[in-house]
Length: 289
Image (cartoon, rainbow, N blue to C red; front, top):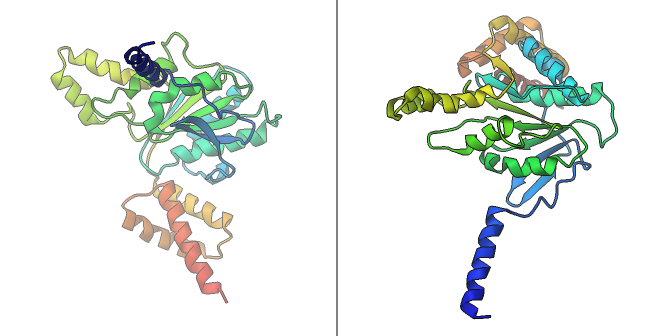
């Protein structure tokens, strides 16, 4: 064969490989209960110890907790369940709730490893690889929560189209054994500036905005999260202090907690946890020999 033709065929084959990469070589869900998806190359990395808090420590989000827990229990039992979007203020417990609910369901519904609920995290920048991940997961026997933390889209970002087709509306859609949970600071997964820009530049502003806003409509369960009032903030720091066995008078705990929240300019679960971490370090330093 002529060398020029051989070189051209080689380039074509390489291009086809890039368009249709080989199947995931390491997508076994038997190694752990939680995994992280990496798209270059495609693989699932097991997580031996998940960074999470106990469900009982999450204060001020009781309604959201119960709704997400109910949805997840139904899914783990093979019953119909919704994709969930947890949106709202930073540090209010969105991602902590997803991980805590996963742990709670594992404890609440004992099952052999091949049937137990698994948690797979996909990073925002890897959303374009979502169809390949779902193709790998549809062959698994375990139900899977597919989790994306801090999911947002900026102007001229077409990655949302991959997610939109998968959630609903595509020919294949998502496998029956997969449910998608996402957290975002934005209710419609995009900034107000992005929405306004679409309205100002499109021939039909309504249709242009509707196409992108409709992505959030693909989530059947919307859970809003907001900053805490002071009483709920006190409950959170008291719960954390009790869990860490910190010997401090309640009045002093509240006084310090208020001072800490004022330096942060907010009251939230994250602020409460950061305060308790600082307080625990201080108290244990004072009692150290």
